[in-house]
Length: 468
Image (cartoon, rainbow, N blue to C red; front, side, top):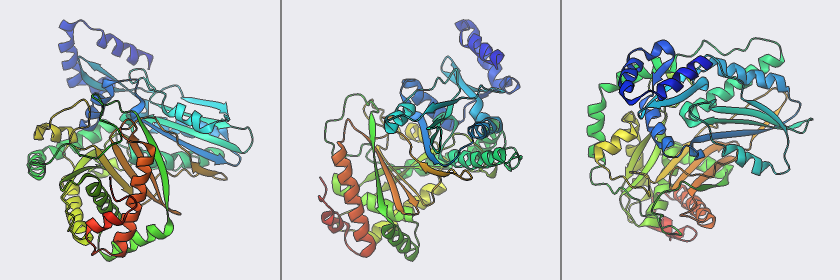
């Protein structure tokens, strides 16, 4: 491990005249040394991270309140089992003249700490979420336990986005629970066969996708031709000249009755709950902006092959949904439009977002995200689950104090209804404004599933506040 890090250090410090040869060597024989080129998704994220390495915008913080007796040694052992199993948890990143690579270390010191429970848990969770990672030194995950020494604890698990995504978290939490169970019972964990190497899986997937890139490019450039690249969403303050990514989050929960109404309505109309709630969100954006041409970003898994299904790593891509609502359009008609746009985007989801920005010639600006400034997420099944035998686990994550977009609306189906989080740029929006958006969205959604033949203009007017 030390040798590989020292080699990387020497590579980064090479004289300018020698760097070309070093780059050629890494491109041709890097695999022999455990050094690999980044995937297209990782390259996009690496570039964004390099703009401000101290900004924790791509930290992925998770924390779980554990109630019951916990075996601290077994939990640490489970974390170590994950690190051994998934090579991306042992990676560091470096570049030579701006050309990025990652190196897989054979082992890393266990990033594990145990501390007492703080008086202000929320403040401690936020502080943990905002602690930056050193991409060049690693490790790119932190784990540990806050405990009262009895039956109340908080398990901390924070990673950098370059080594994981939401799909990865579901894998790791499932395997962490199994590895903990096995450690407590002095058994071997039932984790299945070792996953494929990340580099090999990415290489095969990108090779398969390469043949379709020209067709994908044509689809997306046609689909987004003439689209507005800046959403005129009214804000509480003027947009700063330079995007700071400062942000906050608003957490909310809607009742089980509304979730069941949405699910029943969706089944009746042969759409998914995602499509139904997204349509209501489009109505909200239309009512706030007055625009009849809306672009909304939607994250997709980016996992186009079976071998990536149990692989920890960053694969996620962002697709752009273009929707054209008018005030006289009925909700049911807009729902059909959203369904068609969603299915088409899913069928063409493998075109990298950065390639799309380049292909469109979309203007770059320091004060807003290109193409889309608002994103929407809805998960129909809870994936942030940690299960440990004899212990109750409850998600209590902190926040990084950042926002990747102007606003991201995320919802997830939970046993009690729909749990939501709005991450927003707090230099643009006040918390009360975001709360009103959430209230208006709920009102629109409730009215729409009850009377889908209503015109969307009347749905917006009946919501609390009626727009801006």
